Structures are given as C-alpha cells and as structure tokens.
Image (cartoon, one colour):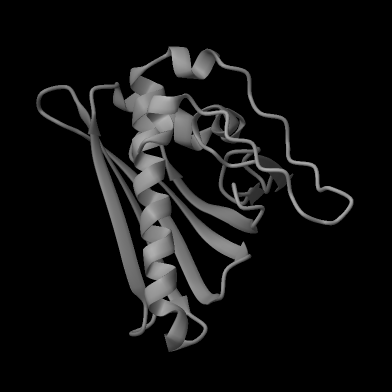
Length: 180
C-alpha cells in the first residue's frame, strides 16, 4: 500500500467456534444467508477452487452497487485476504479478515479494508462507507455463527434489474438483525 492509503477496521468477539466463523466467511455460498448483499457469484475459480486463492467473485450490494474481488490468500483458520478488481474509486484495495482464538473459547473476528482513493476528496466518504460495511460484516457473521436458525432461512434470489435499470432491493433480514 502507498503512503496515502487509509484503513478501516472492525472487530467482534463471538462465542461461536473459530472453525464455524472461518467457514462462513470463506464459503461464498453462505453469504446470501448471513449478509444483506443481493448476489454473489464466482466469475473464475483460479487454481484453488471457488473459494480459494485466485477466485474472482462478483458481489452486488444492497444498493445495487457491484464490485469484483480476487482472493489472494487463505490461511486455514487464520485469515482470508482479497483485493479489489473493480467497483470502487480506488487505485489499491485490500481486504483482510482475521480469526483469533481467545483464551476463554470465544473467537475474535477482525475485518480490515485498506485502500488508496483515486482522489483525496473521496477519502472521508469512502472511509465512512467502508467502516459501516466492515462493522456490519463482523456483526452479521458473528450472529449467523451464534444463532444457527439464521442460517436456516432460505437464501435470497439474486437481484434482477427492473426494465428501467433500477435494482429491486429486498430487506428480508430478521428485524433484530437489521437493527445493527
């Protein structure tokens, strides 16, 4: 990262086992059950399968914004690192999700986004936006791991643009999850 890079980090201590949390983040097919993204698909698998190093995933957020990211590192039970391929006004972007076992059996999940904005004017807005995203992601994965019933709900169907080009946004998370 360059001297002008900015980082935002969110952390959550979960009572769920580390292996459960790690697998929820690694396996893209679970994301429609525990996040509020509209769709996620693997565009290319690289050499290590759909959730391994080299895989490129396309993610459509709740607002209809689309990003593409490439997984660049997976260390079993410890961390997952990815880089942005497209979708944000940045020249460099790296995401890192780390999992640390606590002495009392709980798990610390830390999600960090580090980026270099294309222009200095977008730094504050992008920092606020990405800060909200990573805070929400750590809370949502912790809730999904701690409350198995959340994973029993059906996955949302991928978004479908209306004829006008606008996206339909569905808010089907349980009420208590939307409060976060």
